[in-house]
Image (cartoon, rainbow, N blue to C red):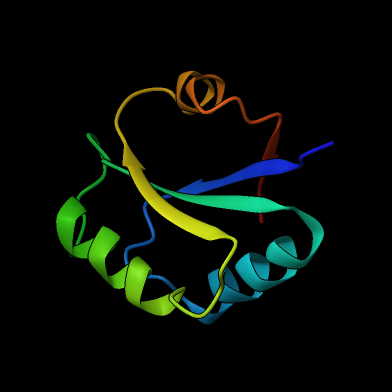
Length: 89
């Protein structure tokens, strides 16, 4: 059975703590989606495109990690990607 998980957050910026969870999750799951949230109510230092781009650079060496962005409820995004597991730190 293919194991897919989503790790979502604003990642403004992506920290070493985030990277620890990403690396450990990538070892457990077949595919991990790092979902960068738009953050409609939270004032962010970097815009969505910058945060998504930085995340792609940081996880470039992890073959089973994909970076995507989303707007709206996390549960709706996870369902649209057919993910059954959400990673929280």
